[in-house]
Length: 218
Image 1 (cartoon, rainbow, N blue to C red):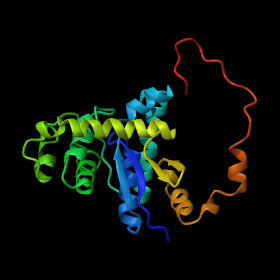
Image 2 (tube, helix red, strand yellow):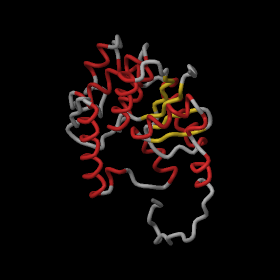
Image 3 (cartoon, rainbow, N blue to C red):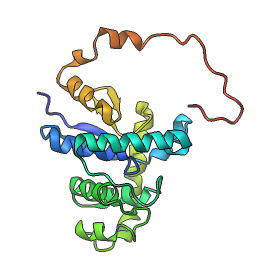
């Protein structure tokens, strides 16, 4: 079995990232992750599309689906007081923490297990204290923290990443909690992406919808 760590791109704003993290940690302990926090909003801007929570009907559908997936998987999930929220403090706190895995566990639990606010460093004060960070405001303001967050996003854009969470397995990207099993199957056997999957990659577009001026691509 391939023991190479898998790059895992995520943002704390995503409940699907929380679910995938919990599932991988609980159900696939043999999988080692190289977590790469990034700002999902920057990815959306780069690819020119709205987030699922920015389209009213899609927002409602997304929230129902994530709650369903959590219940099916036996993972506790409670939404924070408002969503979407500003995830920058949580992302930077994760990067500033001495133990990144512990930080991800703690921040996800704060937001998605206990349903607490995370859009300011003050809201994350208890998490920071538990992680051994005495001055969290100073910690998340460090230049190296900001540079790493920016670098993760730039790397993701170069790879063609378009959503979170995304697992990178060799040169393939697998987006979403529901792609977990396929990603791990490909990790163990490249033939999991079979000839038919490869063939449909090259199917031409018969028509392209003309986008009205000013409308973001979707």
